[in-house]
Image 1 (cartoon, rainbow, N blue to C red):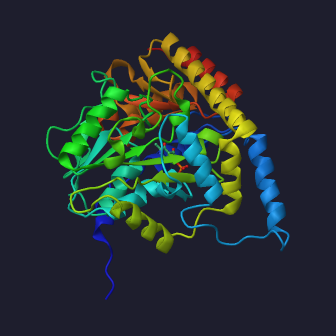
Image 2: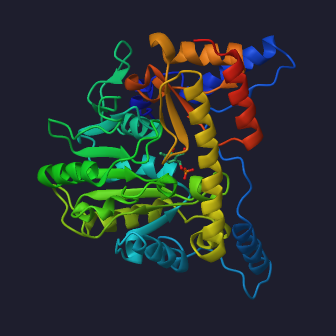
Length: 409
Ligand code: PLP
């Protein structure tokens, strides 16, 4: 008799983006012919860098000729790509080995799968608000109790509140936790952790034999000096942190699919000495995953070097310019805004203590602009909305015009 994993039944209903789509769909049905401008989902819209396209086309040519055809690639990802990633990290004075990199089909699946390495009795700390996959994967993995609708929280998680008071970067928990999810630059708040703030978490993790899962999918958006691009810039982090990153927001690979995870050989935890977690992740990936597309990997390599890197940086700069237009526009209408400087996301405070879904509805109704309600990322997001810069410039400018003309606070 088969039975289901009943942890799925604990998942809170109404996943954020389907609910946004549902409300937007109803509005559009009731207002035919009126275009809606979407600054909600963090999906890229600009074309891939030309050097990336060229590299992928060349790989397709090689695949179409039996003398240059290749099938399954190297374990952990093509070696030339992992070596390029080693060189990429050397920019930040981080020395890693290519065998510490695991190339994947993206950061989201890695962020979900990585919890496989850890026992179901581990206590998990989550930044609140957070990118939903960290929460849901651990609910399914059996590390929580039930969802408490009144508090908007799962029993059993330790929530690290990101608030205006702490600049949206929490301090380490006062109690002992085993796994800590951190994301910097942060989705959704757009905040970025300083070296000292990350060091506090690294020190905590070393002291408690905890493991940090550090999501740096937006590291290329750090424009101001002095912020770490990788947690391994902090002394000791290799002993206590796994880092996950992606080509999605750096080089427009949201549809192409490519990411990487670093499990350092030095990483250890309560019942695993150095080397064990690296070997376990190798075993997991080699057994459950057959590697990322070789076409995507060739494109990823092109994004890391020479012209392709410059073009990827230009793509990031384009979205950051959008972010600046949004940020300044929202400020002009009198909203309090955060983020949007080292991040593609602007975290805007709702006016007059409104809750985030009411403000979502107001912006849709009066300005015909879709944003993301902050409460969808956790209870601390309840009086915020996330505004995404991943639109075409003309749409971003038009959306801001509509907000400036029609939003009366
Ligand atoms: N991590 C964060 C913090 C994200 O915001 C996103 C996408 O929005 C991802 C990971 C997903 O990256 P990928 O497209 O590589 O799965």
